Each structure stands twice: as C-alpha cells, then as structure tokens.
Image (cartoon, rainbow over all chains, first blue to last red; front, side, top):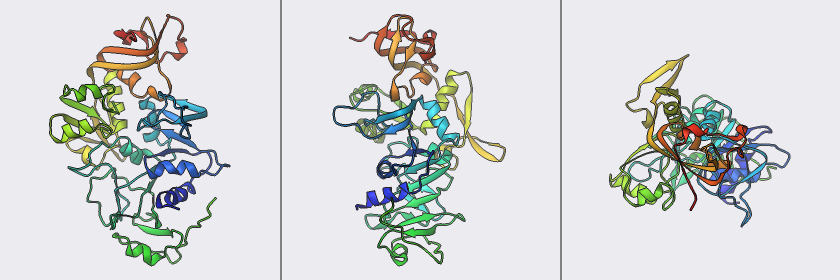
Length: 219
Length: 166
C-alpha cells in the first residue's frame, strides 16, 4: 500500500458511528475511502454541506455541488446544505467531532503549521485555522518526512495554524499523540520499528514501554 | 469570495488587472492573483474563512465586529486587540462591508427574492446583507409566488438589481 493510503486507512480507524467529520484536501480526502460499511459517519464540506458522498461518476457531476476546492462531489440521501456562516459556526462551535488535515510540520508540543511558506507558498489559510481552533479532535495526516527531512520537528519554523495543539499525527511511520503536551509515540506502522521512527524524527519523542505496531489488516 | 478561479467570476477582473485590493481566505486557485500578490500589484488581506464569514455577517447585521478564538497566537492576530471572556482569549475582528455585492442565486423572482442550490449558497446570502448595492444573477428567473416563502433565503428588499440571463 502506498504511504498516502496507508495513512488514510489508519486515520479511518479513529472514526466512530455518528461523528461529524471534516476532511482536508490531499491525504485526508482519502480517509473517506476506508470508512467501514457498518459505520455511519457524516462528512462536512465547509463550503456548505453535510452528507458528502463519493466523487460522482463521469458525466454525473452537478455544477452547483462541489467541495471547498471546487471539485465535483455528490450528496448522500439525508444531506443538508447551508451558507458559509453556518458552516463555520458548526466548526468553531464545537459541533464538528473530528477534522483531519494535512501538515507541513508539527512540533514536539503538537503545534501545526500547514498554511504558508513565507515568500514561496501563500495561498491563504482557507478554513484551516477555524478547524484547528474549533473541532473537538484534530488529526494531522501527513508523510513522516519530506525530501529526507523530518516533518515532526522540535519547534515549528513556519507560521502556526493555531496556538491550540493538535490531538494526533498519523504518518506513514507512526501514530504520535500529545497526552501530556509532549510528542509521544503511540504506534508504529506495519514493518516499522521504534528505532526506525526515532531515527527519522527530529523532535524528541516520549517512548512508552509498550509501543504496538498497527495492524495491516484493519477492517 | 473564497475562490478566485482564472477566467471565471471575479477572476475575470483580476485577469484584466482591474483589482487593487482583495480580501479573501484563499487565493491558491488563481495563479494570476499569486503572481500579482508577490509583485505587489494587488494588495491582499488573507482572512480565515470562518472569520471572513462572521466579519461580513457582522457588517450586514449592524454589529461592530465579532470575538473569535480563530487566529489567536498566529500571524492573523498581529495588531488586533484580544478580549478575554470566561478565561478564553478571543480576537476582536471588525465588521466588513462593501459598496457592491455580486450575488449568484439558483432561483430569483421578479421582486428579487433569491433561493440558492446545493453548495453554491456559500457566501451569497451573507454578502447580500453587507453591501450598499446588491446585484444578483440567477440560473432561473421565475414569476412572483413560485419560490415558496419558506424557501426564500435572501428577501427581495435586499436586492437592488437582477441580471437577466443572456
């Protein structure tokens, strides 16, 4: 399994029935492909929809039904639509149970940077700052390293998305949580050892006595 | 606006070099806007999308602004006062209004009542409250009475001009 789908599948294991979930663009979008069939999860698209369904078949796209990036989506039976004020009210108001976002870097205290590289990439924060400020649970889904450099860093050198720390980071090598406000290795990916993760991580990790490997056969 | 797509909507104004200043949450989809931002041809204020919605809503509802937790401790907070309520810090974000709002609806009647479809509602109803002149276009213009009162999202008195489809 490629790293993106490995990450998405592991994130999907955090979903429980009845959750309202907002998925960011990139790896997070793939999480929807791994929702177990017996689980009823509501997906929100922050441009004004709860009940986002799969990408429509060719020729079945509706021009007025898109995700926040303007790509065609579908709406499941039971879906609801609303304006951007209500959509972000849902996000800031704590009605969204979980958001899954991509990341440029996460530091040892759980701070996320994912919206700009000064002078290089300044597309705008979109809804990311509201999601991290308001969702009940924030999960970052990203590759462990980019161009050989760890994305789990001691301290973020890029502008932060929020002062609020995230709850969990899922990479192609590890699940990292912040139970006491410090990066803690919770699980390793199939075939990856604790030593592998430590060697590939810039931030200092707290290593509990038992760090399980997640199962390749989840669901 | 949350999306600036080249050649579409207000993307046409940007392509034509007619825009001096943009207030938006995301311009990543418009390479022309990125280029003009870096070359300082356009002044761009980037605002978290939820904050943008609330600032416009406040502007349309006669409020001076809103208190939001979004952006506290980030670049967005620079130069903005912080107000503490019950132990939590909030940014004071001031109201936004415009001279003109260009609104896209799904249905309009000849009085100017508007209804929207699916995810194309987004910022339209909020913006229709927050501009001195509201210009609406609609996919379909229907006789008065066809849009049921419960389905009108933007009431007719808010709309100054309705553009007929060519």
